[in-house]
Image (tube, rainbow over all chains, first blue to last red; front, top):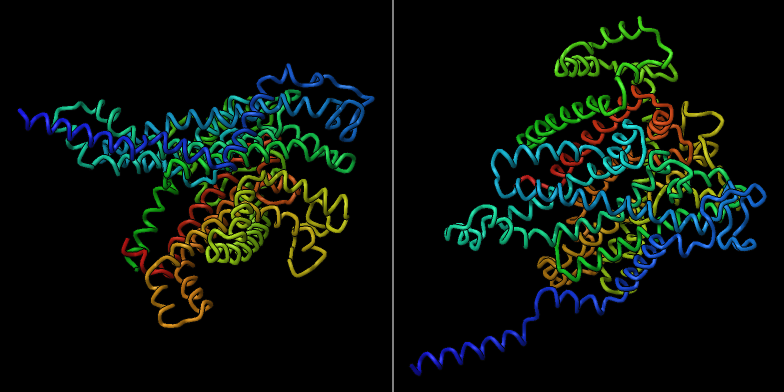
Length: 300
Length: 318
C-alpha cells in the first residue's frame, strides 16, 4: 500500500513540475505575439480598416453615390471633401470606406472557401494515398501550370466578370496550393506511430482523421491560407481594375483606381488613393500572417 | 542525367495536355452558346449552321476536343472577332513584346535582389537585414498596377522625364532596347514589373545564403584562413542554383501575369491583348492567348528544372 501512495505522490509532483515548465501550445503562441509589436500594430490596422468598412454607413462623412458636376475632381482637403472627389464629384473618403467592404469580402471569402475545399481534398489525398492521391494531386498540378493572375483572368474573363464569377475564379485559383500544403502535412503525419496506435486500437478512419490528423494539419494550412489573403485582395482588386469585378457605381478599390486613372493629369494624388488603400491592406495582412507564422512556429 | 531529363520531359506532357483541356473547356464557361461567342451577334442562321459544322459542335465533346487539339497543334487557333486576323499571329506578335519587358524586369530584379539578399544573409539580424526584409515584404504586398500609376504620376506627370504609356511612334516593329527613343518607353513597365520578383528573389536569396552560411564547410573554410570575401564566394556558388530556379519561375509568372501592367502602360503585349479581348468579348483571342501563355509557363518551368539539374548535380539524387 505504501508503494501506491508513494507513486501517486510522485506522480502529482511530476505533474506539477511539467505544468510549471510547459505552457500550452496556444498560450506560448499568445505569449510570443504579445511581444511582437509590429504584428500587433498591423493587426490593429486591419481591425480599423474592417471596422471602417463594416460601419461605413455610420462613419462615412458623405453619401458615396451622390454625384456632383460642380465638385468634380477636387484636390485632397477641398471644402469638406477630406480626400477630394472623383471624376463624378463623389467623395473619395466615403467611397474608400464603402469600397473596403468589397475588397475585404473578395479577399477573405475565396480564401475561406478554398481552405475548406482544398484542405479537405488534400487531407483525403494524403490520408488515402495511392490512386486517389495520384488523381487529386495530378489534377492540381495542371492548375499549377497557370500563373495565378492568368488563371483568375481566364476564368472570370470568359465567364464575363461580375462579383460572383470573380469569387469562383479566385476560389479555384487558391484550391491547388492549399490542397498541396494539406496533402504534404497529412502524408507526413499519416505514418507516425500514434496514428498507427489509434488504428490498432480500432479507431475508425473518420475519427483518426478528425482527432489525430486534423490537429497536425490545421496549423500549416491556416498559416498558408492567411498568407493568401493579401494575394486574394491584390488579385480581386486587379480583376475589378480590369472591369471584371463589381459593376459601377458600387464603390470598390480596384474599380475606383481604374476609373480615376483617366484623371492622373488633373488630380494625380487623388488618383493614387484607392491603390494606397489596397497596398496598406495587403501589406497588413502579409505582415500579420508572417508574425502568426513565426509565433506558431510553422515551417511551410 | 539523361534519364532524369527524359523523365522530367515526360512528366510535362500530361500537364501540357491538361492545360489544353482546361483551355478547351473555357469556351463552355462563357455564357451562351459557343457558336454565338465565335460569331458577331448579327450573324445569319446560315452562318451559324455552317460554323457549327465547321467546328464540329454537333459532335460529342471528346471528339470536339480532339479536333480542336489537332487544329491547335497545326497552329490554327481560330480567327480574332475584332481584327479578323489569325489568333496565332496576334498572340505571337504580342508575345515578343511581353518577353522583352519580362526579361528586363526579371534581370533588374535579380541583380538587385541577389546583392541585397546576400548582404542581408551575411549581416543577419542587423539593420541592413531589416531594411532588406522590409523591401521584400513591400515588394510582394504592393499592387503593381497601382505602383505603375504612381510611377507614371511621378516620372511622367510631375517630372515629365519619361513617357507615360505606349511603345513609341515606331510601335512594336523592330523594337530595340539599344535605341533610347524606344528604351524610354520600356523603363517604367520594367521597373514596375520588377517589384514582385524583387521581393521574392530577395527573400529566397537571403534564406538560401543564410542556410549555406550555417553549414560546417564554411567553418572549415574560415579555419583554413580564407578571407571573408572568399568564404562568401564559396557560399554564393552553393546557393546560386536555388536562386536561379526562383528567378526562372518568376520570369514565367511575369510573362503569364503581365495583363495588369500592360493594361496600365498600354504596352502591346499578350496581357494587353488579353484585356482588350476581355473588353470586346473576343473569345477566340482570349482562349488562344491563355493557351499559349500557359504552355509557355509549362515550358519555362521545364527548362528551369533542367538547367537547375545541370548546374547542381545534387538535385538528381533527390
